[in-house]
Image 1: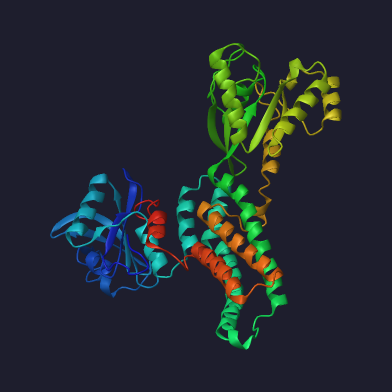
Image 2: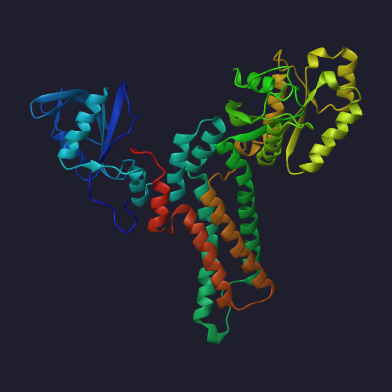
Length: 467
């Protein structure tokens, strides 16, 4: 894998679209010889046209040939360095989507001296050539993997440089003061101060506040990126499996009047209002002598621990004293104080008008549904959306979703905390400079100002081939 220490001069090639048969396929080449390699086998429909002479960002119709054999009719798009995705000469061949044609074209260029691109090598070259920073490069992979509006928004905001700009701004301000602190070390014998300590204290406080906000946003960003786990819990036969099926609009879980049918967690994902939820149907909670059912109940509590949200389902037909259920809900929230618990009354179609009015008066935040009749589901979904609190996305705030960034921010926060403590204790500039350098190092890791071969290898190895 290439690193910042030296970009490979090889011309690389890969299929940029998915493997398999389709209407078209796109084959991408990047490198100094990319245009010349394609020019050698491209016969334009416009007689005498040579790719070596055409302008950048132009598309040309013709035939890809191997000597006198025509492989395919194709569109060839030319991007000249440095105005391309990778910053190098890039050619994209849009051919017919036959698996045979794809392989024929790939094998032809491999024989001409191109080599197979490694995973993420096109984007790695874009990073090494200064077309994007490291956090933007990582966002490319997140954008490709996004499967909901929320995860798409996070990746797009990061790829457009919102997160990078925020980090770079903080780093630039800190670097300015760090240089003054370092200057003081050069004149340590004269006992002079170039950095205003009061102004520096204010800057550290400001940066700590921004980093803390970014760290706190990871809780939201991570679940939005990977899907929000929602545990559906309650006693047996309250309709948990029916609710799961209704939300997914398919018969995912077995529904039966026999108590204890669900003995293992059943889960599936669905996107609602642009956010991916991973709903988990759990075994009903009750006292039982059934060994297998008890294992399922144990897993229910484990799933509650892992869940971001908990849907506490109550059977409307079993409500005798409303206060009993209010107390049970309080017990669940007390047992899991860090969980967002939503109380849902199922089988609301069996309640009288007076019973509904009584529940709404006592607990207006409870949601009444009928999973079997599929009524009240819109209200439930709207409550879920509000609980997720995705407002940060709509307000264009930076949301951290990458665990590597999260770890680096935590380390930078710890180092700056030490700087702040040192200033309070009036420690010497040389000791303070150590922690400042650490903070700058960890902030630089995020955008790629500071990298290692192992770091780049780990990041780009997770990319798909051709990107």
